[in-house]
Length: 553
Image 1 (cartoon, rainbow, N blue to C red):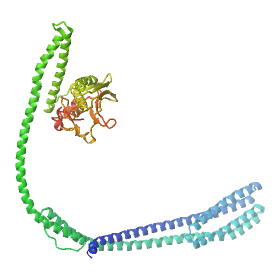
Image 2 (image 1 turned 180 degrees about the vertical axis):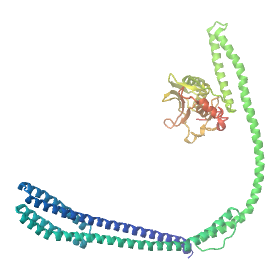
Image 3 (image 1 turned 90 degrees about the horizontal axis):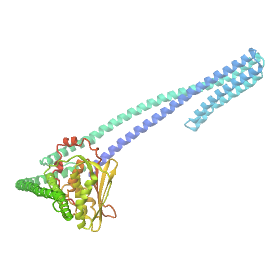
Image 4 (image 1 turned 90 degrees about the vertical axis):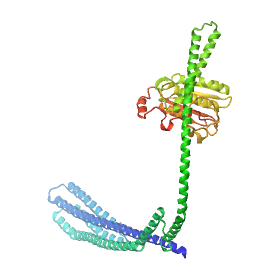
């Protein structure tokens, strides 16, 4: 019983929708039938007019045949020419007969019932008689050489032919008039049906609104008001309603309102307690942030001071080594070789200090990139030279396949540092005895360099995350070195209108390939203007202070 009452509203809506659908289908069917029937009647009317035109044409062609026959005897005309003209006119009359016959055939085919088709087919008897009469006239005229006899033959033909023709014309006129009357009657019937359908539709809509839509709208307004009150925490109880779907909703709202009232007091108490906790934790967090900021400032200052302090004695060492190698008082070749070795090591250490200072500046957001043409191959060679000592200790070989001329435009030191950081990561993750391949060559309008190792590879979930700040691979191992992290490397490449991409695995489920692509020299015009529009050459708000450490490949 309860289930039946719950379905009552749904069933009423379904019944109303069904009635509307049936009314729409009935109206559409009536309109389709009416249009089709009127179209058929109009076609029949046009066919009757066409048959009348064909009969009129036939009458005119028969009259022209008679005129030609009379002229052939009254005017001095050779016999052969007379017969030729009569044959031509006879063929024209036969064509007119064929047109009339085609119209009658079409009329028979258009009959809706077999009886109607038989009735229409009976009219072809008169046509056949007219044809026979004309055929007899044609034979008589061809054999007649006397004008008086010809006139007698024509009079007899007219006496027999004219009633048949008039009867055919009168039948087609009656058919045309019948079609016109039927069109008028059908139009009046359709108008009455349309008016009745409109009255029924209006009554159905009025009953649908009064019996279903209006009561349902009032009940829905009450539900909406109760829901809005609950949203304002002003719960109120609705009076009981019908036991249908909407009544069930009203009961649920009443229960929800009761729960809201019970929980509101508890929420108020929890809110007050939460506000006090938030205030205390906010104060603690502010103090902790202040401490972290002070520690970070001191760390950066120390990092920059260490670089500057180390660079001063190294400059002296480099100068003394260069003097000893060029003009040293020792004649021995070993001494010169020693000085050269000192110079090489000192330059390498100086380069590391430059890296350290550069990273320190990047942490503080002060990066000034140069934009000058240089050979990317030379920068790659410098980075490989820096990485080879670490690679030898790890039992890793670095192979190079670098094209002869790779002219790009940008900051050579920063791009070398990007390559050095990628190589450092590759060396630390390559297995002992494996080979790291560094390749570079022009490709379309870019210079493309790739660093490929045979390490354990990078999980797919980490391949995009490792380009974010402070990100490390899930299995990254600790390491040392001054190479830039992948987040900062990506920023440097973007500032050069280039890109950095990581692909893993490379082959057999292992290995990582890092691809660096840079525009050719001369392809980056307008870079300084765009950089100025971005107001600063640093990594920006999102990249400022990019990680100086390494991100595991």
